Length: 86
Image (cartoon, rainbow, N blue to C red; front, side, top):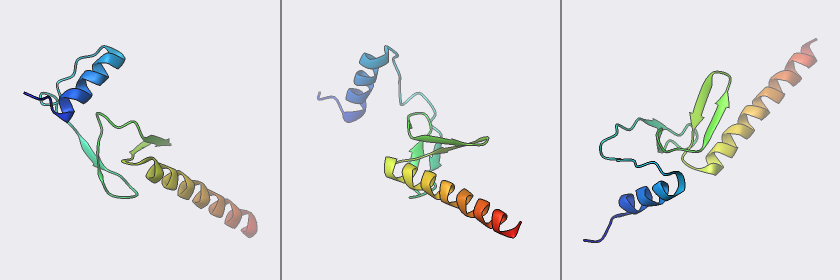
């Protein structure tokens, strides 16, 4: 029997960190990427952005970059508006 993609990826993860994981036995929590709407596995995602007390997970690095840029641009805009009104 030929191993599937999940079995191969689990083996590679085991080689990297020495932890054996059973994907089928563990419950996965899924959230949606706030930019593109794709589902993201909370257990395996490494694209995370922390803002205040919130944590955002992303399916793609481009989506994470877009989100961070939009946050920064919004804060700059609000700061500019506040300074203009004073």
